[in-house]
Length: 497
Image 1 (cartoon, helix red, strand yellow):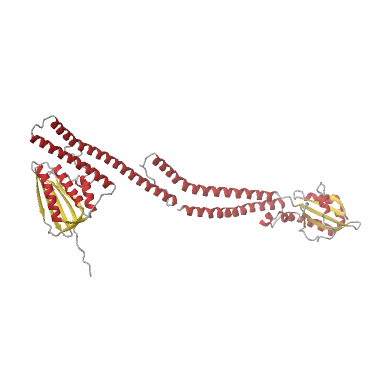
Image 2 (cartoon, rainbow, N blue to C red):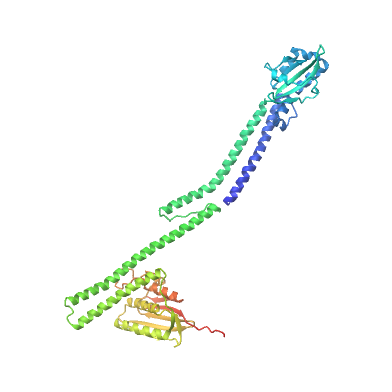
């Protein structure tokens, strides 16, 4: 569930649930208190309005007493002047927050409150100002705050008299006070419980994934990327966890690539150092031979100088390879593409390569099956690098007494296909898929006499692919290897005039 949905649900829940639970609580407590009031005060017909209007309820508490005094006023008015009678009636009002005041003329003749009532006495209605048949009473506001019921009668000496049932409007009966208190506590509990449940619900949906994210961030900070983050839910934080997991995976891949790159660079430095050390050692030895007079004939001196020259060329080739590798790594290989006639180009290449192979006692066979007019778009220098790298790699692994290399150039539709075959020791099936990978060497021993930087064939693959071509190899252990690459022909596109 989305976090937004949870918040919307929580919003409406925190409004509706307290309202519903409060309504239920009002019904429950209201029924209980009404029953209690009916049992305590012996009244009936009360409803929830009585709890809300305590003055109305207090008015109904004294109905019986009011009717009793009213009947006495009608039948025996002078009796209402009797202190004994008034005291008896006043005792009936005990516990009902009411008391009796009696007045003859404008003088107070009975005070049932036992307190000073001069202030309220001054505000009592005049004789005849109230319909004695009504039991509702009148409300005296201001500082008095009292409900007054008036029953007028005629005294024995003919003076007007009035009996007043005074009910304090400030008094709240226990049931009403208890109801108000219970409802206040209940509403507070409902709000607290509802808020606690909703807060806990939302907190659990947020805290758990945040805890995971915190732990993940700590792991990443410490360099540990070998962990996973599983989202707990399909919400916004779950999506954040998924994004965090994707970031972790990318960081791990980047870290592994960096480690691999660093390892490859170390290996490259080691390879280059090893391969440079061999010709340097040879050059140093031959130079010392010349200096010490070991080469004491013109023939020996000429041989030593040629060897030094060849070793210097080997070092130059290794340095060029390293320089070119740095350009591959930054994708800044300089290409100069031109139209190249296939026959003329490969005839020149074979002539140049043949001299080197002849010096190494390796037989070269060249077969060209392409028409004289076939043209490709290529960089002549980089394409020559491809051919030289493949041939040098073949020469390195020829283990037969008599080595040979066959070069075939074929026409295959829209492409030309070049095949360079040798009779070397071959490549195993498990190594064949990786021969074009950077730094991959089928002979892993650094003590191997074959040497090599391990980047020659990766350079070949990069150049061919940048020419829009493709390269692959087939091999059989003990028999030899065939390297294939194809390049698209150049074709003139006719323009309609």
